[in-house]
Length: 212
Image (cartoon, rainbow, N blue to C red; front, side):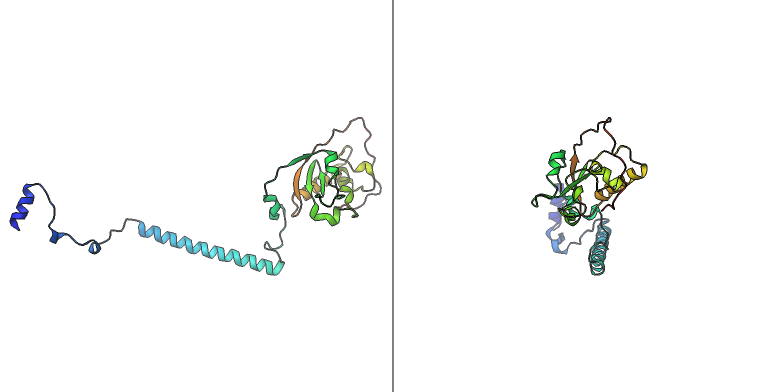
C-alpha cells in the first residue's frame, strides 16, 4: 500500500483509493442556503390562497341564497357579461336606426340618447311595440328625455336648443342611466344631422308625461 501511495504522489495525482470513496447513496446531501425558507414561504401562500378561494366561494353561495344573485343584488354595467364581449361600435344614420324600432322582431331594439346608441332589447316590455315608451325606439329623442314631453313629435328630436339647465341635467341623467344599465349595452353612435340655427325652436310642452 505504501508503494501505491508513493507512485500516486510521484505522478502528481491525489486520487483516493477505492476504500476511501463513499458510495453515492451514503454521501450526505447538501442543502442549498435559503431553499428551506423558500419552500416554507411557498407553502404559506398556498394555504392563504386556499383560504381566500374558500371564503370567496362561500360569499357567492350565501349571496345567491339570500338575494338570488352572486353579487348581493348589485347591478351595473360591470355585472353585465355582454359588456366584456369585444364588439365593433357601429355608426348609424337616422334611417338605419329607424329599422331597429321593434317592427321586425328578428332585429334588436335600439334607441339613442345624445347620439349614443343602446341595445334595449332586454327592455322590450318598456320600449317595444305597444308599450308606452315605444316612441323612443329607433330614434334619438334626447329633447323628450329632458322635457318629458312624449305626446308631441317636435320634442322627439335631438334638438336641445332652448332647454333649461334642469332639462339638460335630466338628459344627462338618462344618458348615465343607459350607459350604466345592467342589461342595456352601448352598440354604437348616431350620425346626427346638424340643426339649422334659423329653424324654430320647439315650444314648451304643457302636457308632459312621466319618463320611463
